[in-house]
Image (cartoon, rainbow, N blue to C red):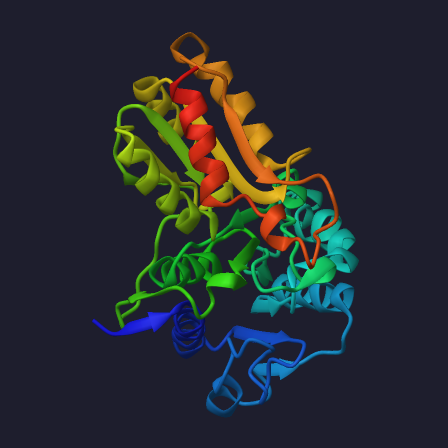
Length: 325
């Protein structure tokens, strides 16, 4: 089985999707001969031509509006937003058009074939405008799916599933892991289920849940916690909309404790939704308050990035407090 980093896995998924279906189109800012700012679309234009992999103007609202129109006419567009921080000019198109297209017509027409790719998150010294984690904004929007992979294997399988999904999908890629995360990835075509969390480690004392780049941080925190004799169960949510409430609840029934972590600010972050849902279902099983380890309620700082990010030391502290409550 070949070894790939996350960028190579994403490129491989796009190559497979475009080779299988001539209706799949790939476009965005600098995605053509340049291959995108991170090179995720390298060589696709030379292989499939300018009609199927092409550059757009630097207008995010236009990129998504154009993608909506293509999808409504039967194409399968994969639109790239160069950084997730730049997705906000397209917010109206996504939440008022993409998400609602099917429902305004009683499914006479839809944009279900649309996938929006966007690198997100911190860890690259990108400062205010290249480090944000906007997933919670879109998880609040019925009609969308929101997916986040944690490694190359998941990136390929989930992206292929997203492109073929009958609903529009926002695919957030943790850019800190683009080249840092390396693993075995099958060369052949495969898909991973959207909406199903994965239990990556079983344990009995406390449940930890995250997604994307935070899964690597959780692993380091678990190593420290286990030296204290704490048995941790780890869950990768993988999909925020829909999210797998059943798998998480079953875990908390067993452990009685829950620690949630994400890079986005605490207030209004998706951890709050998870905590509310779990306490509704598992209240009588909880041995301690549900803990959130998140980014801070400030704009993303450049020089204080390490202090801002929820690292393994903050998470292991939350684990210990939960177990010793």
